[in-house]
Amino acid sequence: MLVVSLGGSPAARSRSNLLLDCSRRWLGRSGIEVVEYRITDFAADDLLFARFDSPRIRDLLTQVSRADGLLVATPVYKASFAGALKTLLDLLPERAFEHKVVLPFSTGGSKAHMLAVDYALKPVFSALKAEEVLHGVFADDSQIAYGENGAAAQFAPALEQRLDEALEHFVRAMARRPRALDPNLLATAQWSI
Image (cartoon, rainbow, N blue to C red; front, side, top):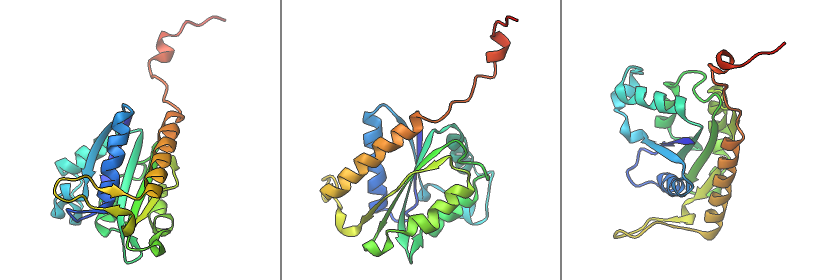
């Protein structure tokens, strides 16, 4: 299986990126390949001027087309997801998430932002034709402590449990996706009438 991880935070130090980092390690221990992208990997001019031919954007499109699932994380700003992430998602073709399972993550200053993914981000995933958008994981700032001086970040136990459960569900959802038939299958079939 292949998963694309997409971090929507424009900040170098980001709780939403910490959720993705932890998830990538978890999936890696399960033998799942994860390709990582962060919004900061893309040139601002490529995003603002919709340069579909940008090598980095074309690389993202290639990986998304190959992926079984996507992890998408964003901080919540002003009651919605990060605008830079929306700009990047706008560059994807209409059916970019077709046959994909999407697990969203979001972080915010308080629990008041908990529903931002449901009313703001999930409709975008639906417009991109995601096969299944799972119930996401929201963490308020008090549930994630940055690691200092090389120490690992610390998650509240309840958040760790929700994250583990969401990732287990994500892997099961990817495994149950229908697989495309090999186009050469009928050419090699033995027919009897």
